Every structure is written in C-alpha cells, then in structure tokens.
Amino acid sequence: MDLDDLKRPGGTSGGLIEFIIGLTMTIAGGYMLVSRVVVTSGFWNWGGYSSFGLSLVPLIFGIAFVFFNGKSLIGWILIFASAIIIGSGILMNLQIYFQPTSLFNTIVMLVLFAGGIGLIARAVMAHD
Image 1 (cartoon, rainbow, N blue to C red):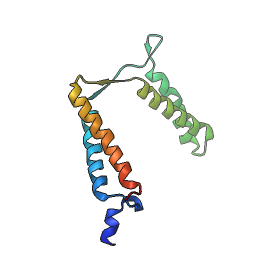
Image 2 (image 1 turned 30 degrees about the vertical axis):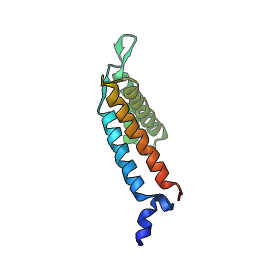
Image 3 (image 1 turned 90 degrees about the horizontal axis):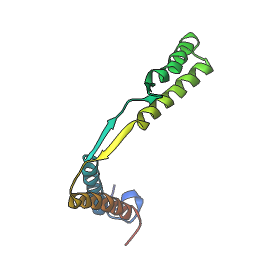
Image 4 (image 1 turned 45 degrees about the horizontal axis):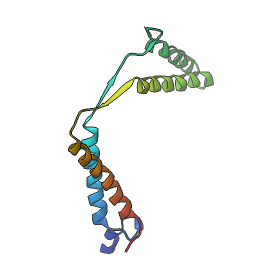
C-alpha cells in the first residue's frame, strides 16, 4: 500500500480529505435532521373495527401448512404474502412529523447533509 493510494478514494484522483469532511458533514446533518422527526403509529381500522388480527389469519394457515409439510408451496406463499401485508400495514399506519425548529437550524441541517453528499461525490470523481 502506497501513501498515494490514500489520496485516491474509490480508485480515482479525488481527495481523501474531501471524502472524510463530506462523510462527517453528511453524518452530522443526517443525524440532526433525523433527530427532529417524530414517528407515531395508529390503529389498523377497516370499517371502524381493528383489522390487525385479520391480517394474521393467512400467516397462521401458512405456518400450519409449512409445519405439516416443509415443502408446501401454498404454505410458503401464505407466509410470504402475510409478511408483506403485515409489513406494509405497519408502514402505512405510521405518522411522521417534523418537530418545530427554527429556520436557521433547518438550513444548517440541510446544508450539512447536501454539502456533505456533494463533497463525497466530488472526492470519488476524478479531478486534478
């Protein structure tokens, strides 16, 4: 390993210092941005009733089929479909809010994040 290799992130003629500063800026800006987000969830309702239990029925049948015969295609399809239904149901019922913050703080977060990504991209592209 040559000392010149450390100056070439990604095998290009970009700079290691630019990459490290960009990575630091991206991590700091991303952390500041994500720490201002609040995520809550609600109940699965369908027709006024909770429907989460209903989404478990195909999973139960799929598990039963797979325990009876490990090569059961229908069982594996039911388990896979149920995992998708449950996962998408959880994601669809999430409510994401950005906490109130000052405009200055928001601009600092976005500049750090976007500027860091720009520096990383510049570091891995060939330049003199």
